[in-house]
Image 1: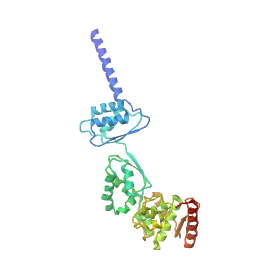
Image 2: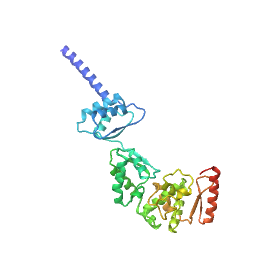
Image 3: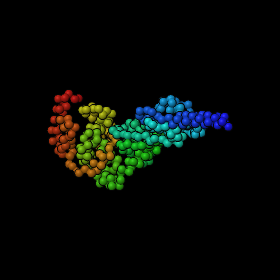
Length: 336
């Protein structure tokens, strides 16, 4: 009996030691200093998944994760997705997330977007799909919602969004469009209509105002100035539209050669609004524009002190005087 009890005790100790070892193994924590992302493309093999985990988490934790993963994951389980692993996360919990595909949403923030291509690149850089696939999704979905290709930027609004890395480009386009449509309430559409504008035309005017000035307090005034010109049948003659037509926003001084550019965006040559926004306007700019009081300004010129502010005027003579001072300041600084 003593021998039996002795061997039983040894058995219990061995089993306990093995069990404790397994417990410690599958509970190994990720000890990185910062959180790290694990991206698993669709159809990733177990070998590639192991290598991916090793690169992100280190060899020891990756081995523990895969040991736990193989116990509970059938061959049909595909852990396709993106997972943010925090310091202290344990191997078995990481494995459970992979098995259940409990992804971490990725954040996509965009502003200062001037072209559809730039938007596609920015969004796709955080997602699994390519820029080309996102562009194709825009072309497939937005015309059915009333947007012509040059107006596509008016279908979205700068903001921070959350998506799952694996979401399709079509679903992302629809979500972005839905966010924009929620902003354009009946009240805002009525306010735009009272100005003789559609939501898209408001976006175009506000995009020009944003390119004209970095000073947020001036943007609504600038937008209303161009609305005044539009109502009078005057050409907008907005320098940012010329830069857009040329394809170079770094131009600091608009010259005659720039003004001769043949483009529907060159508002020195073409009357009315350009065919689409020259950037994606911000929510605040649109709100300020709709709420702004009427003004009688028809002309604007950058101040000669290079403060980024503008002199506004109703009559051309005053505008010419303002422009001469600014041109003299440019010449004095050798800006060409």
